[in-house]
Image (cartoon, rainbow, N blue to C red; front, side):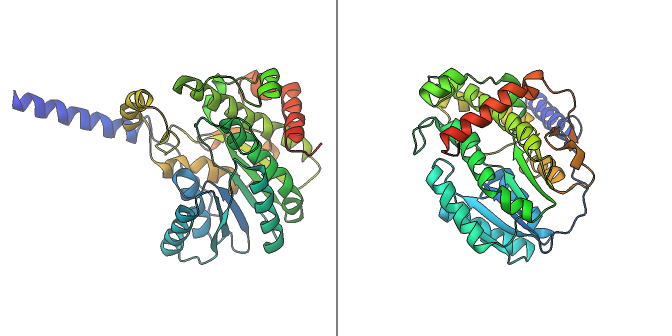
Length: 320
């Protein structure tokens, strides 16, 4: 009996490593670009894919601004990145994407202290309930609206520093997303309800917003030297579900352990979009596995919805 148990365990372990070395293995960013003299902002860079992305950019010589809400964790990430890369040009600036006031304050700090901006990596994301400071649904406010305002307010500096790029981490979850503009206008949220499944759907709606935002942004940047890309990082072990309820965590923990991969793998498509030369003509496209996905769902290329989302976002941010 014991021998059978040991053999079964060995089989499971072997299957685990086989999966992660074949089917679940993600491609690597092949760019050898050096970034000395370049400046990058990475939101949500104190953990997960964001920290891994920031570390890679710092290793290439960039000045990297970690834009995070949590000061303690942000400063700890700065020290870790400096220690591992030897690049002292890594700094923390506080940014709470759940507060449009904080976004504006962050941008004021950047424009006052930074003479250039070459890369904006809209990486931060969450799957929490609650409301933002201005009363928007938390997922809508952080995953879309805060990044929308951040990007729009930094566009002039990006244009002046060009060629530059805006990279927004979306998700394949966009495929399950939809945008109820009536609900957004009335309730300032994607939908009502906040159980774990409803929060997951709101997350998917926000990822569709990321894809449509990038699609519309590319149109508005056509005559500039700024390009933009959205992406699916893969199924990655991050902290995005750390505030999920007990049953959701019970369901997802074994799935995550078996089938999700590490954050270094998850950062590769972000890095590809930020660094790969020759993809400028693909501005506005959605990438996965370090390559553009050309057969996206029609709702990801809905011109009317993209324009309407942009205009509504402008209105919510007081820009129109």
